[in-house]
Length: 161
Image (tube, rainbow, N blue to C red):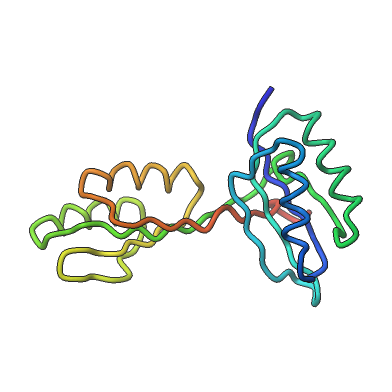
């Protein structure tokens, strides 16, 4: 059964690692829905958080193939455990002064923030799970979204694990 998987991959911070990891997904016919890469808690290592769709058997194959890549240190299927996943989005919304109070109502409801206001647009920042961001985009759509930028999901296992 096809379902969403969130995978954390600890890798050596070296040129070409991102290309090799993403290439492995492409060769297996897996689409990467989101990928974030950043510094980890250990010097010289980066953490990739990858969201993809597929069945459990294919995911197992991907994990095995990832371990064969020379710069991969550790692979963790985060979605198999209780996890916290967050994403950030910046949304530039068309906003004439008369519409701003209404838009601010949406912003407040989602505990989002206005980070820039222009003469006829505003940039809204929202942080949350992907469903929250999707819902906010849907509610802002009628006002006119001029530009949208999403970071992709970053995630960790809950608790002491």
